[in-house]
Image 1: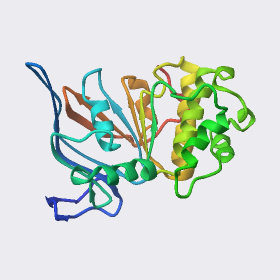
Image 2: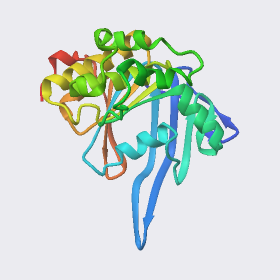
Image 3: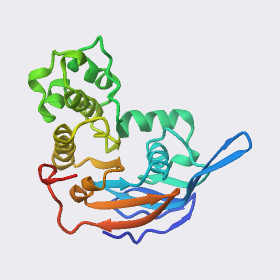
Length: 250
């Protein structure tokens, strides 16, 4: 998949009809005392509607920094991030908050569920602030947890808790789902169940999905594989044939 888009300037941005994100020349620099760390170095990237992308790379390669910038949790030191013709790099706090609430679902390595709330109630935390949410039960059924709707996190396995987190992320019907090491705390078999849930959401809802991992075995299930190193994208590979999560080995 290729884009013929060109970034001209902040007032005139030409975007492919299928392009959800355009990242151009994005740099992120952290200054800690006398130490300067370049987390991202002039990154260019397009994400397309409905695709499933895996971002590979070792710790410190810039994957999480890039994901946080895409999700409006952080801002670049320089460069542009365009989401559907909107320049997120010049957006104010209110606009970024609305973007995060309405357009983006987040899934992290650790589930961040509230222990005193049931699965349904954890999902409802998002549906209460979304403009057109799905019912918490529907979201949980999409990740094969309809029968665990009234269970508390302590009554669920790690994989089930992560699938509740996925249900919570998709319940607001986001356009993009950003996942940072979603299987990092799980064993092989449980991790595959979580990946199956993500693949199903991508297929059924058409949600653009980006998954960060250091596990190269996951790459085979993606439409595209983006490899990062030292804050830069070093390769972008398109898979001609995708492998189902159940067939993955690592």
